[in-house]
Length: 225
Image (cartoon, rainbow, N blue to C red; front, side):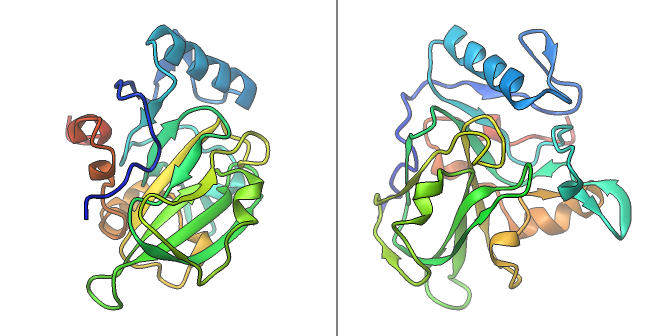
């Protein structure tokens, strides 16, 4: 069965560059407060004539400023984005692209964390099993589901959240594929250390195929370019 749309976009293509040193509307994005950052995103989408925009997979970013992205074992800060972001209005419905089961869900309410997050399990146990993660949802997205619930292709499982409830980010969905949860549940990272880039991206391959309205090459950051 063909995967369903996770978010029903307008089909227009706007892909943000949030890599190191990036700017929006001639404004550096590193260190911005959420209101200013949200305003620049909204202005960019309006200028492009769309209500939807994407953030790239495997992109090295300077956006992750909280202690949540530091490691006790390293002086590094986690910077490598392991999912695809879809920016849109708070309240936009979020659907599952495939049949699955709710693996876990929670409100990760630490600053710049996922906020309300749902992880679905797909496929059968063993080699065919994989997971999809939906981060930065609305709080009421957690009220209609519980671990173990079955969901059908195209079923709405939640909605895009607003700050500060969504982890205090501009409204967007963080969507991530996961091959093995490593028993981390809702604490599975969405951002990795650059020194461990290949390991973590191996566990979370590109989900670009789930957004057919955009050429996959535009949604995947190339660190060799």
